Image (cartoon, rainbow, N blue to C red; front, side):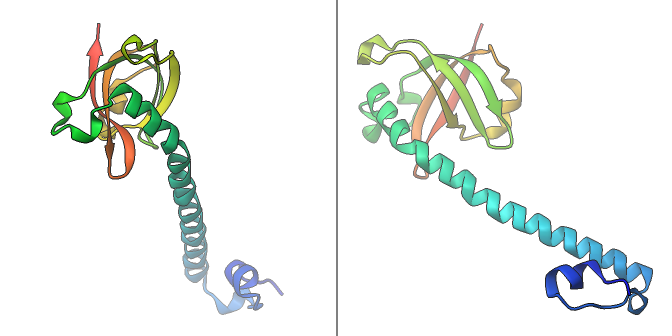
Length: 152
């Protein structure tokens, strides 16, 4: 006796295939796929949030060094610009990996960082090697890049 995929694997109740016409089996497979996709998405989203939360303490230290007045800024236009080079983008994640040189005015060495971008729709225009200037701020509890200017 053949068993239905959904009932055999999820419900552990054997059901002969003759009970289900072919269209019902297709619906069952679709339901199984949707269930599996839901599980994957629900597991990956907390993992992504956990990753951003894990880098935020270092990002906040970086932001306080780059912009000691960050808490008192009334607009993004007042924030200092940091010159950097794009080393990678993750459109799905909405983040930019960039390398900046030493920032002498605050005694910061050169480093490579990954931060989310407040407006990820613009990420597609950035390619590794693109020279940019960025402004960063804490937005919705996360340090994010809030503005980007292309440098030529």
